[in-house]
Length: 374
Picture (cartoon, rainbow, N blue to C red):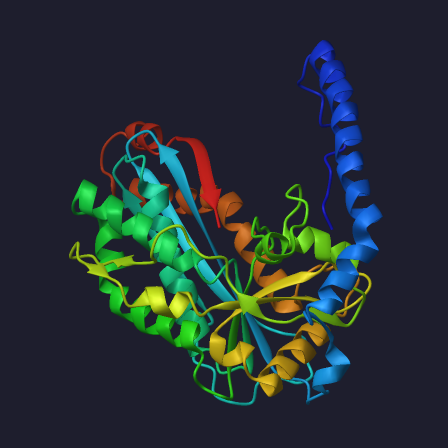
């Protein structure tokens, strides 16, 4: 559950707080009017979904055995020091609620981490995020579970890697650039495996918590104030899901930039066949957005297995996403707050090696701020 700081206004001027609270009241009124717009049209929207044969129930696809599941998530953090940057990224894979537990061999470790110094560069975070994506996808591809949940959209890795490659080509050699380049082939193989999901005994799906997509909204002329997930949370009853539909068409073709600078256009056709469905497993959960390969979306048996896994892993009120993703998210979120401890360990080692005045070491390793992300 989200925690709110008990004394959020301590350091703020009183007049500023009063004005912000006054403006918050106005924001609440505007949001309520927008919310009521959906409430008034709720039944009409629901009937339209039925007419278009988009609305379905999980009982219609059957109840297969409870699948084994795994969630993968990652994060990165950059601490800005006086002399250098302290860069770290990590990815973890967490098994879902048991039973059942995965009996097949699961290669260890179930995490990946990278910590190293970098020269001052405003693009360090962008490149580090690309390395984080490589780690996440490699863990996901190797997980032997029936269903592997990834955080974010299936298009996110392509976007992040492209941004990282562009920065590497602009700035030249760096430790992070070498790391990303060395693992690039593994990333390509893992990403294609996940996007195609051709193995019938395994499902890889992505579940973005925050989304602006409106595939259904545009098709059915819904209000543009809310995305599909927000509207469907109001419309769908527990156990209902929408027929898988294609992702929103991009404004330009999907492509992947290689470390050599060349363009790989093979991903455009694969990503254009990615589908999305929305599912509400229980009354205490919001609607889940699930992105998947066409091989999953067009197979009723695989859809049934996916829905069963989602329902089982979302069985705890208060956790609004599958349990393994929730746990992986909680773990990696602490990376940023742990960076000062890693820096302290590195500083201690430097003082052990240094024969002169250690004061200069403490100055050079002084941290100004930590930037983190997922």
